[in-house]
Amino acid sequence: MEDAKYQWINAIRTKSGPESPITRLVLIMLSVHMKTDGSDCFPSTRLLAKETGLTERSVCTHIEKAVADGWLQKRQKGISGQ
Image (tube, rainbow, N blue to C red):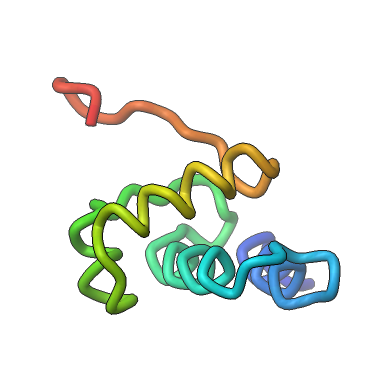
């Protein structure tokens, strides 16, 4: 049986995935940091910017787009709510 993480990655890669190739890139890079069940993923936007070659601002923009489009759910983590 295929893990939830890989089902999600495959959905991103389909025709019904995010329209923007940059949003797809950010989501695929997020998947590198996910648990196999797809439940948790908490890389910093600075790390995602480094890994994708995008600016941190661009990473944030595409994460917000992915949240708005239902690909991600945001949760606060840590004491400071980062």
